[in-house]
Length: 86
Image 1: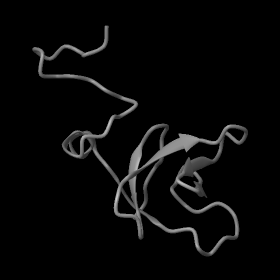
Image 2: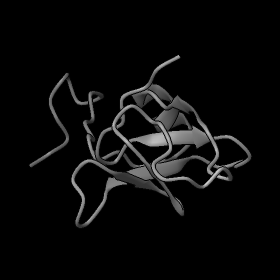
Image 3: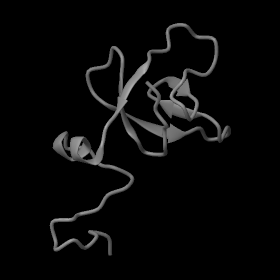
Image 4: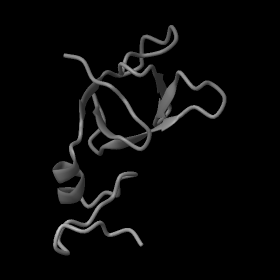
């Protein structure tokens, strides 16, 4: 199974109970930082550390909301279909 990471994505990582958020690496645009680990855009471990756990899923917007997490892409569709942004 293949995943594509994106900025602020919430992911489930093997061995971690709580979801972790992905962020672009500060100096390497091809790398995402998730917790203490580094992954490429296809959610594959970067580097030779065999202890890097696998990303098992990316949470969809409904799962993010249900878990009480905040997404980088936050829209409130409860107000008549209009975005919650101002």
